[in-house]
Each structure stands twice: as C-alpha cells, then as structure tokens.
Image 1 (cartoon, rainbow, N blue to C red):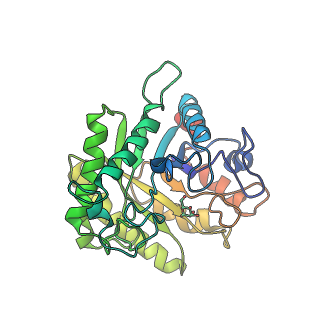
Image 2 (image 1 turned 135 degrees about the vertical axis):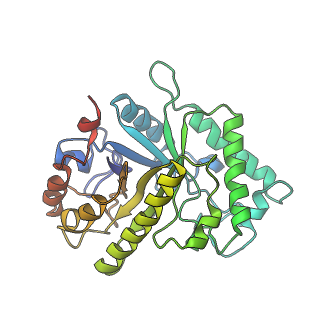
Length: 310
Ligand code: BMA
C-alpha cells in the first residue's frame, strides 16, 4: 500500500484547502495509508508541530477510515526535561526523567493523558474505535531525538515504550497496532532496544535517500533483509514506515530506485513523507516525477485506496 504523510492538509502549491491532495490530484486516487503526527498534543497545543490543527487531524483520520483507508500516527513530543523540541538531544537524562521516580514523571503522565484524550476521540460514525498503526519513539538508533540511543540506554528506552503502552492498554485501547521503526542503517546492537514480541506488532525502517543513490539502495536492501528475517521469525508485519527523496531531483526515482527494492520484500505499506513547500517527498500535479509515480502505482503489487476498498 502507498502511504503519504499529511496528505490532505497541504501540498506544493496549496495549504489547508479541504478535499485536496497532491497525490490524488496527480493519480486520481487517495493514498491507501495516511500518516499524521501528534507532536504538540502532549502540551495541549491546538496545532501540531507542523501547524496542523488537531481538529483537522481528527476529521481527516475519521474521513480516511470511513473511505476504507488505513491510518498511522507518529508522535514527536517535546523534550520533557528541557522543554525544547523532540530534536533537543543535548541531555542524556530526558528519558530517565519521565520514568517512575524521575523529575518529570508527573508531567509525563499528563502528557500521556493528553495523547489518550485525543486517541479516545478517534471513533467511526457508528461509534467504534478506529484502528490505528501507532508508531511512537521512532528512529531511536539515530542520535537526533531525546529518546535516541545516544541519549538513553536500551533499558531506559524500553521502559519509556512500556510506560506509554501499558498506560494506553490500561485505558482500554485495543485498537492500536504497535509499530517500531529504527532509522536506516540498523546495526545488530540496535535490536537491544526492540521492546519485545509481546509489545510490537509491526516493524519497519525510516529510510530517506539523503546522499548517493547506491548507498541508499545498499543500506535499504540490507535493513530490509534483516527485518524480513526478523519479522518471519517473530511473526510480525513489515513496512517501510517513512521514505523519500527530498524534492525529487531525479523524477524517475519511483520506478528506477524505490520500486525495485520494494519488490524484493514482503512489506505491507510504504509511507512517503510530507509535501511541505520547503521540502516535499511525494508527487504533485505538474511535476515530472508524477509520471513515474503513476507508472509505479499501476503495478499490480502497489495499492492505492481503490485497490484496497472492494
Ligand atoms: C521531519 C520534517 C520536519 C517535520 C517533522 C515532523 O522529517 O519534515 O519539518 O516537522 O518531520 O513532521
């Protein structure tokens, strides 16, 4: 399945217009999967870290579910220790501070409650909870978030994961598909932070082509090989939980670079990152890459919304 982050909120040439989507406008269909982010919900903000009102996020989650689509949520919470952003990676105490006995534990309980309160409102028109692929604490093997592997130990990371999960489970959420996704370049030691078979349903990797194409291909094939084996052995779902080539300098990237890799692995979706003006990752009408995107989605193993709604 094809996914797109923040698909219905903004595109290359527009913002906040209802009913629009760059992907739909160049392909005729919605992505099968839509990704949204909860960053900012923890402190009671009305808009998320990318200026999307949470009321809009709720409406689009419900709309996408009602049309038969799949929703995935990430969360880039602020640094509970410093008050900085999720990228405030200067200290090595932030994770520990959230845990029971930690200085920020009480504050973090409130933050989790704000997440809970939002998740509780994600219900169908006939009042049933909407299934969500929930993907907190991602890219932890990088050193850029306060929950990164340079910022906390694997045990602290797992304690953070479990605290959030146990809280939401105790609040009755049985509609969350728990997704764990390190960043491209997975090393054996990174699996020390894997929260456990009883705590993860779907594994993935976040993989962008920032540098040379051959490095991206080599690294993604290597990580996907590792994860495919892991998922087979542990009976988990596999996805490419974030991906993209920023601003698509090579319009043929979809069919020439990405698709041949995807074809080799049993992934259930790939989530293309957002189309913001200063950095876009998906196709848009009038862009040359849209031709190649459309060619990619014409393949029988690539599914947009209409392909999954029968
Ligand atoms: C990053 C960038 C940021 C954005 C963040 C959360 O990859 O796109 O601009 O704030 O994701 O969506």
